[in-house]
Image 1 (cartoon, helix red, strand yellow):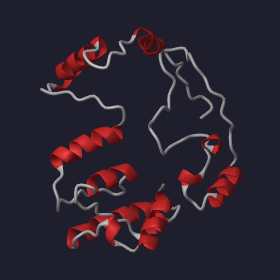
Image 2 (tube, helix red, strand yellow):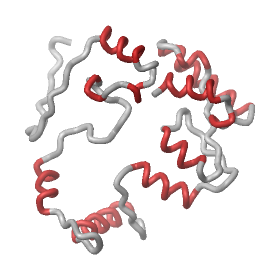
Image 3 (cartoon, one colour):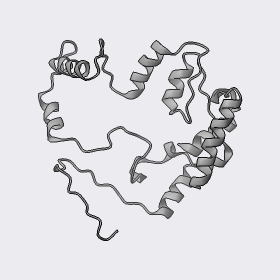
Length: 191
């Protein structure tokens, strides 16, 4: 690994935020203190956030300048028409509905696509995704084997295979149909 060539990034970072590097022992202590639920850990204690995709990278000089010259009009903003033209030319969509976050996009999508009684399976639904499905009267099958909850990669692979084969043999169970104690413990193990 000593002779591994590391490429130089083709950009300059315009904004930085200091973060505190953590130790394994420190992370384990914080996780235990939080009841193994990462939503209970203060953000300043997180070194690398693998839970979110929101705001996890530096903005480019073009993005920062876009904020300064952006059209903040409530309706008819030129920035929307540029955005709409780009999306239509790339994807060929007839309609473009901008949203501020993925959860808002999911709500619009699920209102259009998911009906009462539908089943929307996933290995582990994100909490807002599960809520957006279940509020429509659909179920969110949750099939993870006990062995997948260990730290062993081999066990995780085995658990995923077991869950997949079990799903093909029987009707999946909705996460909300399980007792709350089992639901919360399994969710905490993965968030």
